[in-house]
Length: 218
Image (cartoon, rainbow, N blue to C red):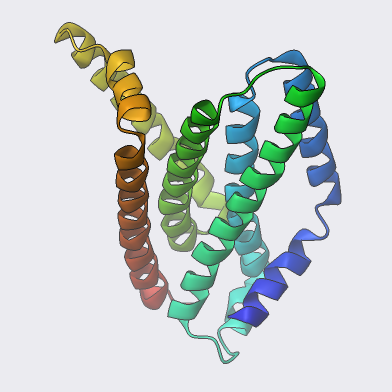
């Protein structure tokens, strides 16, 4: 698995322009906006999607046929992709956080620890959903067909969130008050609960991905 991780890191070395543009976007967002939440979540999500890039490279010109002849099982291949996605996402979270904290210090903007924690939790939710949804779809349909499938899944998710928000509004439930209570009054419980849910979602997604790849013929 270590060799697979090294392979994926080497594949991304050719994406220097992408990382350069991403770094410039972080600086631009932190200069324009006083709240760094968007830039941190955006960069974390982009780093999570890098896993799709490595799988696209693996599929290029029947590369998977060659990879699966190596002493790497399909289960190990899937596990490495999830591990790589989590490591890449956490690297993006840490890197973007350091840049935004430095920018906030230069601009003399106070960024409370509780607010950063809420942002980090939001990023964990986003990257978990991104990996959980995109990885099995990519393995099932390949790099070309998976784009429309991923777009459809996230479109349905957006509609579902909108409907839930409207239902809560109709029922007289104050979502902002619920979130404030979760992240301020019960922060520790919320963090542990979200971590457990994220782990459960990723575990289910990993199981589906393993089954998909084991049934796939090359």
